[in-house]
Image (cartoon, rainbow, N blue to C red; front, side, top):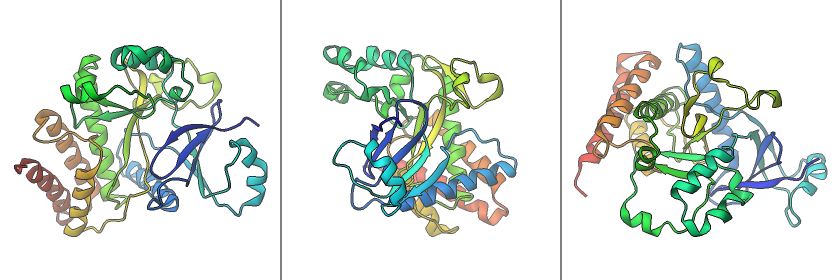
Length: 319
């Protein structure tokens, strides 16, 4: 069997896969405050929430990886067979086996490098194997400043943060950027009101669609999957991942405040009312419309309205 190589690193741990298409393995070897067991539980819970939303007539726009198995250190047969596939010195630990989100291929990686990478390290980045694991964070809530542009002398294609001004610089159509906002809004509404989860620290990334088989490589899949967006980045979808600090939320005002805190503390994926009013309007209307379709009573529908109101009020307060 092929050896594992590292394809990502976060606060919860490291992520591993093989060179060929296959699952990803997320190890619990990160910060002590992060729980892979909670990640697994919340991931499964949200998969069920999206199934329920689909059964209720919602056309799901986002992709969520399948979550297969929670592996523990005492599963000796598994580790006896697979531990040698990790680099020397690694030991058994809690681990999640899940569907790997496909990385962008070389044309997209080269585009991002040529447009945004400092000239002196472009060749190094293009030829770097770790940078082949390229996912793109969709930052609709932030534009780069001149200061941040000057400071960005390092560069990595892993979880590359693509800010709103960069999307415009790449001439990604405004309709596609609006679609990103719609997908985020629908997704967050389902997470809140079907999953009953606050969505704390979840990530939204752009990445290619999953292929059903190796024969699908190179095939135009847009005809049978209308979640696929095609622009200068190539064919891609929006995916969500990382659920390790998500928490259950109550279906009341206390739960709404918890969700607002999670929204405000997250990385700048979501558009903001003051910074991008048009994009925020798109997000706002989709979030409310999806929530109304999902909730069973007008009394409960007051909760997503309160969520939006609190976000707008917090954004309008002077610093």
